[in-house]
Length: 222
Ligand code: C5P
Image 1: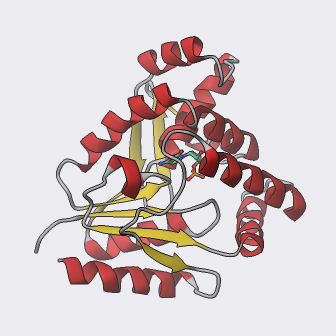
Image 2: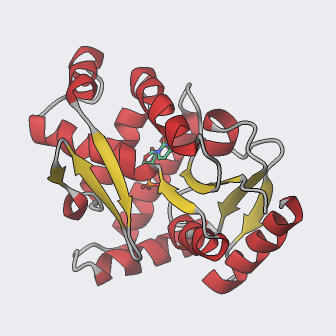
């Protein structure tokens, strides 16, 4: 059977990660969480105390940074210059730094090549913000997974609580609103559906249903 590229973009908390992983598993494809690359860079930027708006310092960090992704059953492991930083990726602070560095053109340019290399052989599900619009404009199956902002905030809050992080739903909603606004309004590769993307609203769908909807479309392309 033909091995294609599937892209799943969308705002925070729409269920992209769980859905993308399940779609990849079902198809026997590689799953690539591109947000983990931006988060990996954010961890190093914070560790070094670099200002995300300082292009010169950012360029120096990118030049020396080798990031690899190891997809596992329930998470993507991120290795930065040989160090496993997986446990540091999913905090509210790193989410905001990731969003800040992701608005810098030099960062997007640097990660563009890395992401395209991952997709060279096809047979992959890429999750992110600009997979269908910028990184893989020729992908055979593109999706934009979204949901009502209140539902997204509730889901993300639950996720953080399960990780033992003491945050309020109001704070999660506020952070998410800012991040979505910044991601959607940045000059380079803003968050938006590709013209040929299929919009999937997960507000009223559980994970299995969203996966089923996407697989149904993907199978038409195989
Ligand atoms: O998907 P996740 O929440 O892990 O992504 C963290 C941040 O990385 C996003 O808010 C966004 O700013 C950035 N990102 C991006 N382009 C991608 C993936 C993530 O700009 N393809």
